[in-house]
Length: 469
Image (tube, rainbow, N blue to C red; front, side, top):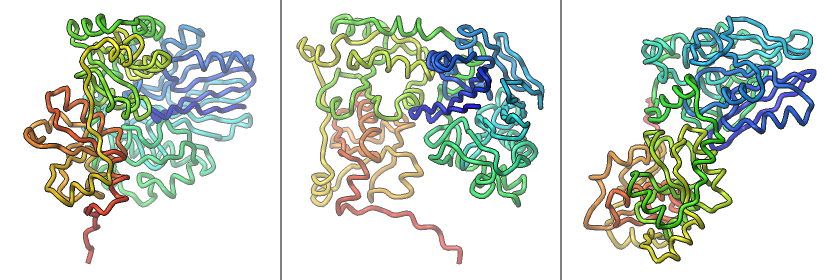
């Protein structure tokens, strides 16, 4: 028996390859499916099943394409109703895979079709679970995403999840391995561990939601407390996963159209396309196409695209190095952004060489920022998440989280410099690019973000837990 976790850091997502005696099951594949096919072929194995734990919201799965390429059936748990051919398994139904078996455990709560797959070894012993978004390491799936589809409140879904965990998951042997659908960084939970493999026993000891003495009411309160609003693209990804989607080869073909600076500019003007610059933030600061939006490949690229570009049908034009065009399109397609019109041939250097207008961003080192803070009263904006800001922040800085930056446009000062920072410099450059596209240009980026600021003597406010005395 072979189990391989295929983890994608940008999405904090785990897909799984399970093989026994030449037969393979792929669990929650990404949209680009060739790596799974190649892995099976290289091992002289055949993909027999494609298992989906639920209709994913944060990425487009590769289930439809993989089934078309291999002939393997797609399997969902109870309550799923996709628009394509699939096996809708019954609770506790067993699928043979070589010398092992996979048992369906219906575990609703995150969504009503959510299913955990229990891997039974050659002797029928519980070996591992593939828990999807039902159980993470350190957390459980958020119960607010499926409210509309299930005609239930988030509290009702949380109550359902409480039963699923206690009746189906916590009854398994402590040694059972846990392979979750996501890790830290995913928007599908709020307290996920950086680890990507654990055990039932470890989770009983460390996961707040699996406390043995926890009441249903306590579970509902703790699981629903502090949930951030889900990114706007989530419902659209659910629909793609449920209804089907365009083959990635066609998306790559369209998006790989090379455009001269003149054609690129014309396309932007005629279609209203977002000009998406995916280079490093330092390169963007040194020079970029006016009104282009920076979201660099080196950071949490796909989730930030999904969070900040609300409509997955939005036309997009790419500014990137030619050797990164395919990677960029692939990563956009993972979250359902398929309407890519092409890319700037030769990258930004071609634009600059054409004599067309360019824009820049003023960068300031943390040390120079320290001097400015001592000498003046500055307008300082922290674009980190609210919980990061509350934990520790520059005194007198305003919190304008990147996720909702458009809600704070009137907050920025039109007649003086606005000093922008995040944790390390990635998010602040995204924020600045959005603000500049909205006509706000008197912006200064603090290089290195709050991490660099903390190395200076700039006063910060530290979070203090309220006294319980």
